[in-house]
Length: 278
Image (cartoon, rainbow, N blue to C red; front, side, top):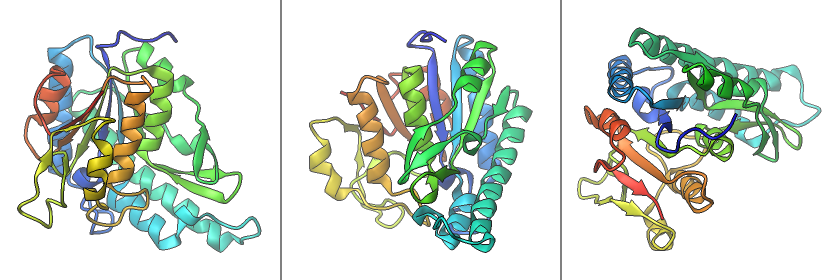
């Protein structure tokens, strides 16, 4: 499939921190999820040509189970079924949340089709080597909305690995060249301190290749259990996509601010959260 019009394709991640309570096992935030689904539906009605690829984190479903079994550290080649059961349990937890997200979006009128990353993902030493994208491209051709998620994957070097939604999006961006990527989290962008712990934390409105070194020391880990890395990992991954020309701009916004997602999808210049750009 050729590139879509640059102003029409957007990758949107619904973070695990906003659609679940990451400190309580398998706890979805149904009302927040439903509102975000309605905002996505409204944006598509306002911009009929808008095409989306959606993804979501595993939150208190996959992350807590994955951490319990240390999936991010891999599994030895000679391990028995009891150790590999942790891989299966983590995959099942991630899929359970995906079903909830998919059903919520469908109820809001968003024609999503779930695509399971672990069905085709191949890793080596924790790095994603390949992921089948044909189904994603086919869905877009039919004006459907592909829905992916943070998942597990088999790994050639360490048995298994966790592949975050950011990792999946980074791979897709290099294939699809979206105009923008929108990261929807619990907080309104990137702050100089953890805003969930420090009431005086200040938002960093813009991040560029020239400013990343100055602010990276301020970026800490995520609030709650996260086996895929903290905010700095996410920011660096998104910045590299901008620098390499795979997307023009990345928005990091709060999913708890009503209307922020709809406004960002409808208008690329809207002032919400943090923007990563050249």
